[in-house]
Image (tube, rainbow, N blue to C red; front, side, top):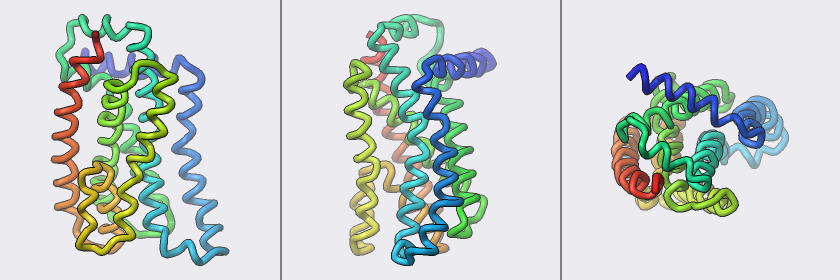
Length: 236
C-alpha cells in the first residue's frame, strides 16, 4: 500500500510537467469566485435568476470535476499516443494498484474542492454530512470520465473533440429539472443525474440517502465495466 501511495504522489507531480495542464488547476478557484462574489451580485440585480439557483449550483458542482477530467484525460491520452502506456502495462503493479495510484489524488482533491464550493456558496444551507456525501459521489465522475476517454481516444487532438462531447453528455440530466417529478429518474442512466438530484433533494431538505446509495452503486458498476475495457485497450 505504501508503495502504491508513493507512486500516486510521484505520478501526481508528473502530470503537471505540461504548462497547459497546470493552467487548469485554477479552475476551482474561478468557480469559487463566481459563486461567492459574482453570482450573488447578479441575483441581487436580476431576480429572474433566483428560481434557477439550484440548477446553477448543480452545474457548478459538476463543472468542478473538469479540472482533473481534462488533466488526467490528456495525460493518459498522451501516454497512449506516445506508447508510454506500454511500459505501464509491464510494471509490477496489480490493476487495482494502478488505478489507485492514478486516481487517488485527483479523486481526493476533487472531493475537497467540491466540499469547499458547497460549503461556502451563500445560497443554500446544506448540512456537512450531505456536503460530504455529495462531494464523494460527484468526484467519482473523474475516474469514470478519464478511463472512458482513454478507451475511445487515440490522440490529443481527437481528445479535445471528445471532451466537448463528454461535457455535454454530463449536463444532459439538467433536463430533469424541467419535467414532471414522476419522470425525473428516466435520466438515471446518466451518472451525473444522481449528483444533480442529490443536490436538488438536499436543497429541498429531503433525504438524499437512497439517491447517494444508488449513485455509488451505479458508479461502481460503471467503473467495473469501464476498467475492464480500459485494461484491454490502454496498454496495447
